[in-house]
Amino acid sequence: MLVPPSVKDFVPEGHLAHFVRDVVRDDLDLSAIFARYTERRGQPPYHPALMTSLLLYAYSRGIYSSRRIERAREERVDFMALTGVEAGSQVIVCHGVKAQQNDHDELMPMVDQIEENTGRLPDEISADTGYCSEGNIGALEAREIRGYIATGRQKHGTSSPTANQEKRQGPRTRAMRTRLRRGGWRSHYRLRKHTVEPVFGQIKEARGFRQFLRRGLNNVAGEWALLCTVHNLLKLAGTRTVAAS
Image (cartoon, rainbow, N blue to C red):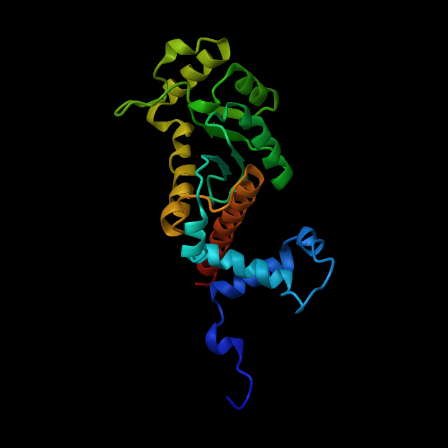
């Protein structure tokens, strides 16, 4: 080449890579990453914004893995990934990871995170039976959040998630069971199935992400935060595309 090539010759305008780069450069707080760049040894490091953009783009396209990383995994530790998703946009508004299978105590911390991330509490919350307890229902009522929490498993062909009702008999749980049964097929609880579940499906199928590559709770939580950021970037990019058309 007689002259330096232009990036636009290889990555056209409107490409997802430009969108990810602009969001990382202009909107994300990378101060924690910049703080780690305290000393220089050897060649100067790549710019943190560039590397963050590259990493996020790689998880958008499912090219984050390698055979070397696959071979390096010798242990398997199961984690539970948690998300809260806004019904209208499928944007993730809170997330977390637990090393236990019981997420019973995570409902209100997730609500607190929603308020911290968005500046307001949600008007309604739908959650599966793992979050059903007198304490959780009471905490939602205290914050004037209308809850739709399954009081049991939803059997195939039934209109409400209220099976195994004899196991939970507190007054708030009974009131919740009545609310779900009265709503039936039109209950707002049904929003959970086409709000949260599709998000996990998109991460697993579209991004091909089926197991964590990192080890340790903190590292896995960081990786899950990265995946949630990637999901939201793609949702925002899709909105931009629709608006432009």
